[in-house]
Image (cartoon, rainbow, N blue to C red; front, side, top):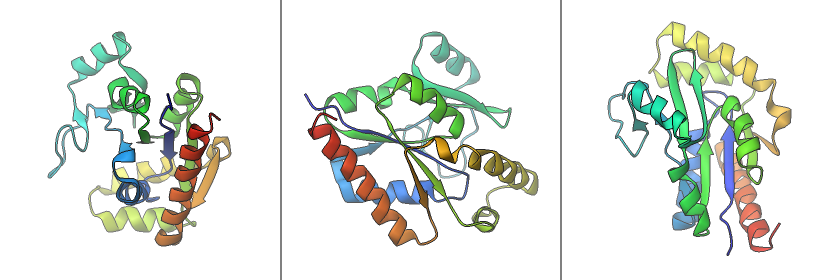
Length: 193
């Protein structure tokens, strides 16, 4: 049995994680799936439960922690909980399907212990790009942007802990490099490495 690869992508808000993952899913089709995280934060306009996130109550999330439903979980910005349900990862990998996770550095650190066979990729942008991209989104108030920028500074200090680092200064090149890394993980899984 070939276990599907586990690809963990971390990086500051605005580094382009969602874009790279979406493009990789188009390239790999049914061989690769994006894990849907659970969260206690409110649903944003246009988000769909079970597609964008599993929107859980605080109580439901606490029950998940108590029953060991998560591969990793964290409280982000001291406000909302995020976690990766085991059901989003394990059954797919057992069928040879690769799973990609988009998580923060706290979650990546936990996954190094719970999933030591994971491949960890840190995505970053050139200096100054984070703020520009966050502002262009137009989804966050100023205080949230400042919080995210401070978080980005802290996350960047962990970049050396990852198996690979990608600089997203050109999206097409970054997508090609990202897909190349994923292909190498499928190859390693087929060869039992």
